[in-house]
Length: 65
Image (cartoon, rainbow, N blue to C red; front, side):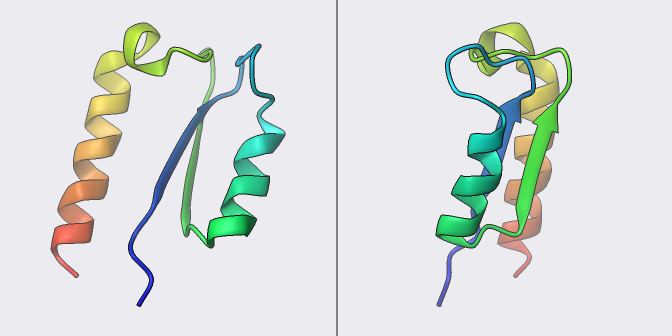
């Protein structure tokens, strides 16, 4: 059984390039990758409300499985 996995990545991340999101998705088989425009590496600081909203939706969907 594969557990649901949530990948969220800032398109403006200067530490880890956005291409890492796709590589990670392929490695772990995640069905959901979100690329946030105008977001860097510190998503929870830079885009806290947007990240929290998307994470809550993911958790609600995962719980409904």
